[in-house]
Amino acid sequence: MNHKSFPEAVYIMETDRLTAALSLLKKRKDIISWARFAVVILLMATLYYLYPVSALYTGIAALLLLAVFIRLVIMAVNNSHAAENYKRLRSVNRQEIQIASGDYTAFPDGSSFLSATHPYANDLDIFGKASLY
Image 1 (cartoon, rainbow, N blue to C red):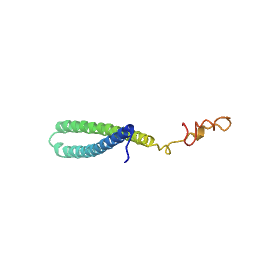
Image 2 (image 1 turned 90 degrees about the horizontal axis):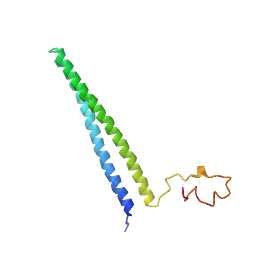
Image 3 (image 1 turned 180 degrees about the vertical axis):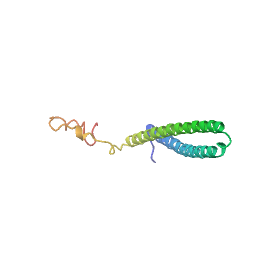
Image 4 (image 1 turned 45 degrees about the vertical axis):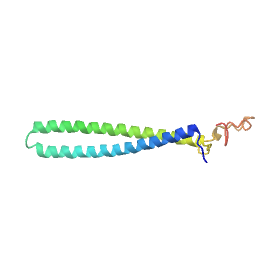
């Protein structure tokens, strides 16, 4: 029977929550993209059908649709930033799950910082595989 430690269970739950949130953000991205496409089509239809009737109405409708389009672009950018943030958080949680399970092999060992001239550097196990670093 494999029992998870409390921190590991918390990181697993958080990773699952972030994965679900990323799925929702992906769906939201798709909806925003289709809405922007619809606004562009609606703007072209407005220009085509409303311009012969009145240039004033066409201008007002075009400004409103342009404002909606700009708002949708801002929503898409915010959604993209949120998705990137959630991806980073999920990556951190996955690293913490590795650490909680005792797997440190995926992380740098700091051997590039090891001093070849220091007399006690190798004895202290500060840098290198299975070290403090």
